[in-house]
Length: 55
Image (cartoon, rainbow, N blue to C red; front, top):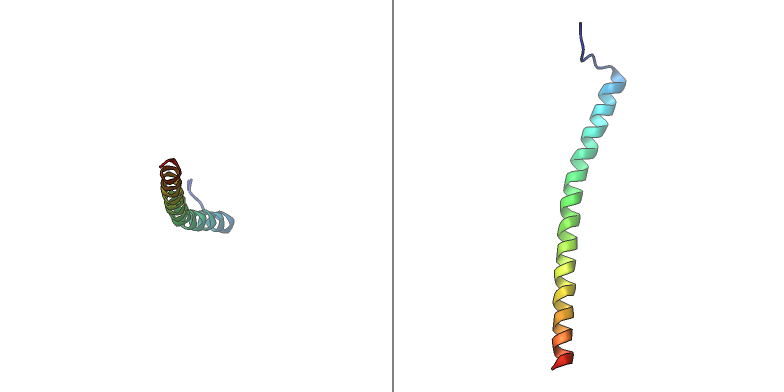
């Protein structure tokens, strides 16, 4: 009784899901870094402009 019998279709789908997960992790990390750096840049620019205009 072989419960985990993998046909060619199941192996292909498993490989496809694994490849998508491998590609998704770096994409999420890079996107997070880009968003954080943009948030820091625009936050700093806003506070700098705000303090210059109020002075």
